[in-house]
Length: 258
Image 1 (tube, rainbow, N blue to C red):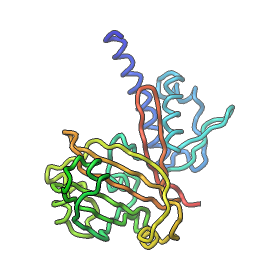
Image 2 (image 1 turned 180 degrees about the vertical axis):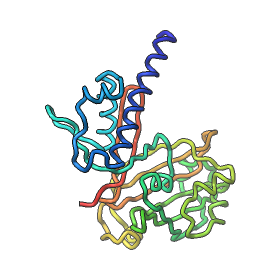
Image 3 (image 1 turned 90 degrees about the vertical axis):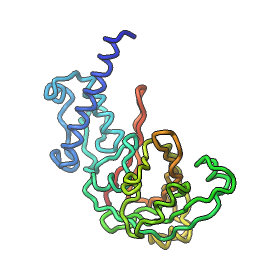
């Protein structure tokens, strides 16, 4: 592919993302109202000075984010006004919550130091006998419990976390101040049954299904800095996935109450 063709591809990709970002902002600000209809593709193409294909790509992103839906022969309908955090941006829970107007909260339930088990050694690339710091935290959105966070830190990271106040909202920010950066992550999503701690902290029944996100995060050198398993209460958050030939992005957004 020539340099000119590459530049054209990049420009096209940037264009539909800009249109999607503008429409997303309008949706989240309530410009179209709840269950309102977006303008027709032709009208949007004229408004932004782009092709209908570019508009379709932008709308596909919004559909993947759970903000709009459509049926054949009808215009896109706004589903909700939730702000979306793409995991490709690697925003922390705290930054994600604040980006959608929620007040994040965190409370440390326990922190222990012990030898890493086999799975933890594999995920964090540790030698046998290495001790890790294991935290159990309750995370809230505007005072409402939504997630139990279980995180395993390697020694150099755990030593910093152990010095933080139990009610500190974010671990990521003070770690960054110590030069520990979270730059890349791998995510796995599944469903698990709530155990006794989950039930106590989230106010659900033991055995109830919880949405689990398993995440390993690395720093700019590729060195693991955390291995975490976050368990979300159903009805409080949702995950959406957008795939394309160019890239893939995993995002989460707050679910609205029924």
